[in-house]
Length: 585
Image 1 (cartoon, rainbow, N blue to C red):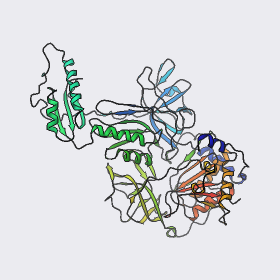
Image 2 (cartoon, rainbow, N blue to C red):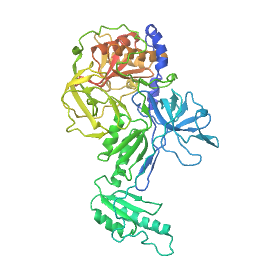
Image 3 (tube, helix red, strand yellow):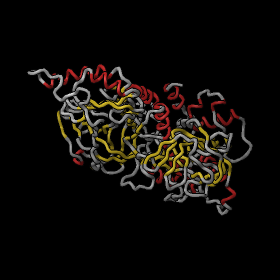
Image 4 (cartoon, rainbow, N blue to C red):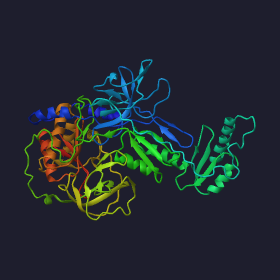
């Protein structure tokens, strides 16, 4: 179905769902404070090759990508634009005058007086980076928008990168070399050096080159250092034949520059549209560096899979804000913003009690142990238990939260990277075992089988209303009648769901429904990973859904008359991870 077809479906007028006035009052007020705009990113524009190491840049256009975990993000950025239309600068800066950079429009409580900027011909830009915190909406205008939830502040200055160009040998003039060799009396030394480097580049291009650089350089002259795969002595002789100056050649097992450029091309092709910003195939350090807007576990897995054996350092402009980090401003309240997403820290109660009655939760926690299965990246800090990564904080190395893996666990046979005492698997793994939701903030697998390689989890469908346009039955997830009674036929349930999903949208009542869902699930100890709403499409994602969690979701669905998509990260073996809970009326 194309976008025009979807628009036609969503634009149909159908009867309104039953009135939720009985439950919506307090929740509407809470939803105004807790509404979240989806976090997404922007698309690649250009690829530029740089000698001795390929670098790739992109300028963010308007194409959106799937939202990242959580709604609120923070990052250090430059600010560009005009007096009336400031923008965040993402990606590379074009070195014209004035400089150019594109990105989302900056909204909220911002004034150019808050930052130091230059002005030329009505265009403004900052030379320093500023820390912004807020919500990114990719659908708001051509380049999206970033709505501030905290004042813009000057970003702390990090330590400048030390550019280390080491000399690979003790005697760079061995075998006939000389600082003055090759320079004819009266000849310009700079021109002679330039001609020599041209010859060097032609010979170097025919070698299995890993990296090359000048040390002790004053521009064009210096000691030429080369890493090659294979026979270093043979490479030295070929280079010495055209370069009488300083020369050091060593053998290396690292991927060649050609292989790294191929890997970078593969990474760019593998990334979802809109995520890639810059990439470098490496120079002195033979590895890839890739920058994206927001790095999710799916993004990281795609990058490492595409790069194969080539090492990658992945960075992101924006990092999700920890749910318990206070903000000085409310979330955006624009009712047209979509999708609306948020995350919750397990065990943190809502500021307002649930609008539904609390159930009896005094049962023995052991009675909730179940055999479940889930797929995720594996992660472990050297002083902690291994975990399944369900939420990720993108530092380097990444920070991770999710169910702990207790009992018999070993990294033997698992492909992983290790940095600063943190191990991270290079692919997804599936774990099946006995899950205890009461063991820690995220629960724990108290007994489990050895992890096995698993495919990347599927991408969540944001608009379930798109299923209403003549989708075959096989395209629909399982459906559950909210009152627990005998369900009507599949056709009747589809008709009921589509009537609700394609009907008129009451923004505040739908947002209130999302708030009530979270409160209801958390009231019985359910671990909420995120909630979302796009029009009438409402969904909630939890770590696991036992009978109590499902019952509470069903109560909200039955009370409001609106279907809700329930997604689980841990699911009984053989069952689907998505269910549509359908009202009985």
